[in-house]
Image 1 (spheres, rainbow, N blue to C red):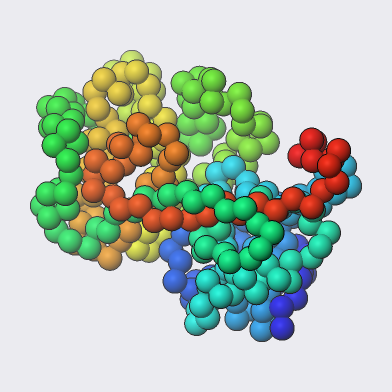
Image 2 (image 1 turned 120 degrees about the horizontal axis):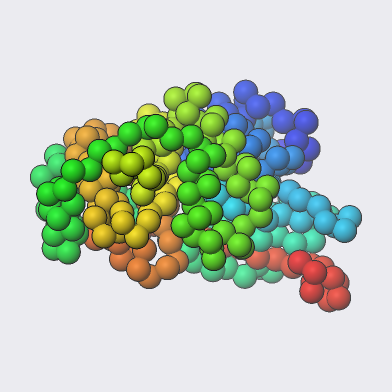
Length: 301
């Protein structure tokens, strides 16, 4: 039987046990991630945590709605032994009607009427093969850029704080940053701090001889999984092809292991081309949208 639970009613231990036993390696559905990036999240739970569906709920003008938080790519249905494609439709059947707007990215395609569906793509690279085999699938431009960067002195260090990396992003990506709220950057900072403190992530950076920051990247790392979560380039790092060198070293270090390198994906063609140059495969996920708001209020969403 599916039940709806508010945030303070969720048993986080049983929740995380269900997520850990499911097939996902992604961090997004774990309670620690949701607590930071989607505070107040709610849930639909079936058969005493045999399958679960996280609900990043919000409220505005007294109206409850669901929206995918920034820095959280996708959620969906999770279960160790049930078909998640079937489960997600069942969960949506039990979705409380008081959610008047549902705008959610999920990992499974749905077949429910009343929802519009947009296909999006995540990119992953299987690192189980030897490095030379993986490198053989890089395209020629990627190989040339790696060779160019390898001829320079590039020294990676962890001498950087999450707050400094966010500040570097705000400076380097001023136009993009204007569309992101300060509270979201605070949550991102807390996520990085949590991951570093709990051995779930790290930041690597490159500085000039005068200690000027020119490149930084935050990785989420859990057993069998590496997520290239949040990276910042500068004009100098692009000129030196540091990003190519950085990713190539991650691949080299983790080749021949049961590890998935998650590039997270992008709808920007140039970034998608960069990711695909490493031989990464794309996997679909879906933005589902349902609006039952009265017409005048739809203008405020």
